[in-house]
Image (cartoon, rainbow, N blue to C red; front, side, top):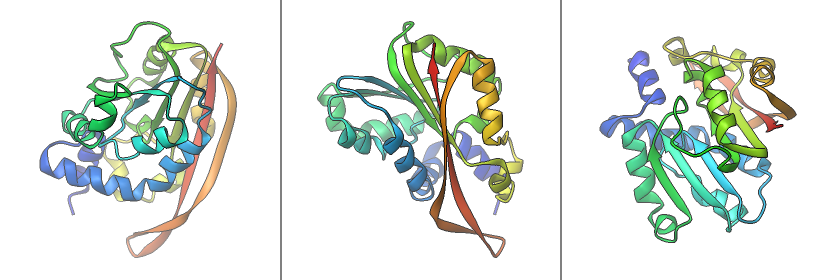
Length: 216
């Protein structure tokens, strides 16, 4: 298997292969998505931004948790934005959701737009995370919350594709990044997932880490 090609598609899914990778990510990332959605502190009519929503498979679960929210998903993969828009057409038609091509380096939103921003398994690909966090902080309302979900460095190092273009993090690294960017730490959740993945014949325990931080 061409792990470098897989890594490139995980970063930015493109074309038919990208669609296949997106569908596979729904399976491998099911628990990390569910854990973060469970962890969201949603209030009635909140405005949410998800960075890197992939094909939008889990958007329905956000609305199941709080039907009154307004959701925006952004991804710099045109393929994923198209897929997410098709999958969530009913939410779009109801004015509850929209999907746009955008990157954390330049979010096309006014200052203080969102109550919550969250992102799952994208931090590895941020080339200048301090600048990305400053941009996220700009679009968050005062008192708003950012949640970042990752898999920790010791686990990720066991996966063969992460040597290509991934920056790996311990939970402490994420906390330090957020603190340096002016966020206030709310808490850290670390949970073993009830699944293992086979890697080179070995069974690897999957782990979810969620770091929650607020805007002063």
